[in-house]
Length: 440
Image (cartoon, rainbow, N blue to C red):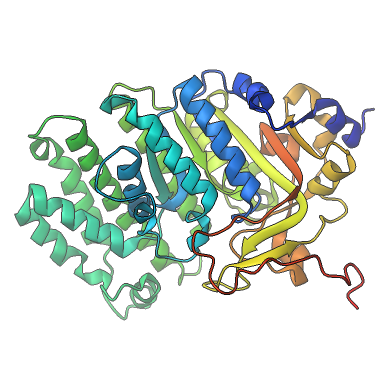
């Protein structure tokens, strides 16, 4: 029987740093309208760079119409205006709405280069063919509420005042955790009913708000509806954080999937094909049914929900892994960005198997007919915005069935840290400790 190592060596195609590196993946995409590109960390330069390379080809060769990223909807809208040629922002100014931790996740050189390219690409396209850049997360409770009010002030001042009063219960001191705690423990009224009512009325009155015909007006209405949807789902999310039974991970990934579906439908209503490429962490995009998340924690994610909602034949899930190198990450939540060394992957992990293959950097398709040796459960590493190497096994690894988690995968044996646009004093290049692995 073929061993897992032999299976990897047989299926892997080495990356040569050429345009043709992604030909096999593009062939695999075919006519699929959904391509979900993951990452094993939020701070690895090569992951951002590869996703940008693949996405450029998806746009130019496959007609993809939008990029949807693991960022907040209102923050990404300023970048969306920039890439479409709207507003007066410079390239640097277009990133200024990313004020929330972790800034480096989108405010980095690789994303900046992609945004610059997308603006140049869109400049050659008619309005209807310009590619958008959008966020899919739900942390922006107060900013999204403010964006709804701002939109209504332009189309329905009376309803804007209703929204201002309705959203007042969110507590506009700007701390969504404060709102969630107060509402969950009955210290202040819940905003659930008001938020849902405002979203419904905004959608019901869409036709009257669209007296001005044209794509820009339709987009503006859709963007406002999405902000209202964020408020509804974020309100539930922050309130659930202080509950006992609701899994906030599931609420968040439900929202992300709903955003993907709404964007797909919006593009189709405008005469497009609804083709969307997603950038998010592997843990959101690899099918949770093939991981410990689904087996033991009853958690689902975007990859699983997308396959179920749209059909597995219409969705391509692509993961990214690394064995060692450096990453930009914080030591604790809301801490400063630091340049951190990533320990070599653990024995028994997917990453260690790839390292042992000797292929270094490669593309690995995972066709069901040939991946039986890769169905055994293995560890897989996940580094988010925090990296704690001192507790790495418990903090950053979980069990997966690789053959069912993704449709394809990119592995880079050694990687480098993404450089923030504004690194800060704590971001200093870190060398490999001289004492590793002995710790003395």
